[in-house]
Every structure is written in C-alpha cells, then in structure tokens.
Image (cartoon, rainbow, N blue to C red; front, side, top):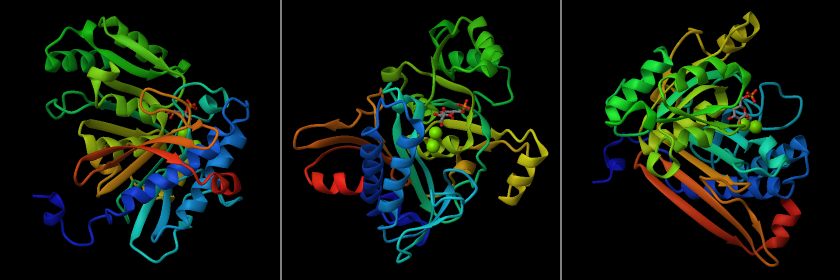
Length: 333
Ligand code: VTB
Ligand code: MG
Ligand code: MG
C-alpha cells in the first residue's frame, strides 16, 4: 500500500510537483553551465538564481523561501522570506542553492549542482546563512551509532564495528579547510581514510547513502547550514542518519537565528528536525560529478541529468532530459 494513503490530508506535497521541481533545477543548471570555466563565480551564481526564480514563479504554489541566497533583500534573489510561485496552490517551504559549488563551476571542476527542496509549509528548518557542524551516515546502521558530540575517533570505531570491518576500511568525507585539521588527524589516527573535497557537501552527504558505489561511509565536519537542510531532505528519502548544529559563535548570529525562531543556539538537529515533513529534493548536474553528469551542449540538443527524491514514498528518480526548445533556453536561461 502506498504510504500516501495513511498520511493525513494536507500533510503531503502534491506529488505532481515532483516533476515540476526537475524543470526548475534543469533551468538553473543550464544557465550556470553556460558560464562553466569562466572564472566568474558571481555571474554563474546569478544566472542560476535568475533562472531558478523565473521557473519557481511559474509553479502553482504559495511558496516561501526558508533557505535561500542570503537574508537581506537588496536584490530580488531568492532571499529568505521571499514569496515564490503564482500563489495558486499549496503553502510550501522552499530551500534553494541554485548553484551549489560556485567555485567548482567557475573552474569547471567536478561536482557543481543546482539543487532545491520543497516541503509542506513550516517543515523545513529556517536556518540563517551560517556554518553548521554536520555528521551523516547512510542507511542500515543502528540509530545513534555515531553522534555529533562523540569524539571523531569513537565515531569511526563505532561505525566500523557496526559495519563489521576494521576502521582502516572506513572512508570519511571532509571539506578541505584549515578548520578541519584536528578532525582530519583524529580520523586518520584510527587508520581510516579521509577523502577531501574542495566544495559541495550536499552531494558529499548524499554519497554516504551508497557507500558501495561512492566509497564514502561517513561525512563529518563544518559546512554551511543551508546545504545541511538540503542534504537532510535528500537523506530523509534514502534513509540514513544525520545531525547538525548551527554555529552561532557571535551575538549577531545568535540574534539573527533568534529572529528566525531558533531559541536554543546549541540545539542538535537530527535529520527529521532539519526536514520534518514530506519533502521533495531535486538536483541537476552543472559540471560532471560522481552523483550527476553535467550539462551537455550539443548542436541541436541540450542534455541534463537530474536526480529527484520524494521522502514520503522513498522514490529516487534519475531523469535524463534532452531539451530541444533551444530558443527558450537561450532567451530565458
Ligand atoms: C560547504 C560546501 C559548499 O560552502 O557547505 C561550504 O558544501 C562551506 O563554506 O559547496 P566555506 O567555503 O566558507 O568553508 C560551499 O563550499 C559553497 O556553498
Ligand atoms: Mg549558493
Ligand atoms: Mg552552496
């Protein structure tokens, strides 16, 4: 029986919106991909934002951006609190990162994606644009086998034990940042491997869901909060465990967070606190990556690859699209 039937009315995202989201991230990805390798992060990001915003405003939704491109509304740019959609539809929360991995795109390096999530109104954590400490593992482990406040060494050892392997057979994914020097040393001290990425921890966290293919067992470290909410949405669908804690290390940040409803600055959010309702997440590849192929510009066709997750059914779809209406893409994206 489909789990749809058991969920109270009004708690569900219209499933028809699943494919609408694909259209939105496709457009953003194509717009950004035109600027791949041009060394201009800002231009690529802006192109993705504009395309995403335009498509979102066509959707039959009454949407509020809760995770967006910043908190101040100097320019119309999918800022937090912005209303999107033609308001002719369900109240939904929207989380966006129109170009996740702007640097990767500007340098034409692997792993940049256009990504967004949609969920029933009030169910996505409205997080300020600050850092978030995160830990994530894939499905199939006992609840609590790792914990955000445990020592990294203990997390690796406990995970290895639960997997039935030696710590030396575990690989952790960590953002390559000076702030992670101690974390990396601690992980390596157990014999485990660390794979470093320069950017892109939305995909990084999603990798943990499929260790056989990606080689990644666990994600650890400090990335951005918006990316944490997007990743949690996807992991909700596939299964796995994730915890996050906002890093509110100044009074100004705590104040901002309070304004967004964060009463406990130390709170540990688990996956379901970050994305608690029925959530749909879509991501389209901009540059080639392990999760998705990048946009291909052919003579007559533009090809995109998108992955879309729907939590209530646990369905993951991969959608390869050939876009022939090139005039439209040229004109608008
Ligand atoms: C990460 C990464 C992103 O920001 O969240 C990172 O996944 C954190 O910020 O792709 P710093 O770059 O300041 O360390 C990104 O790199 C960019 O959104
Ligand atoms: Mg961004
Ligand atoms: Mg980002």
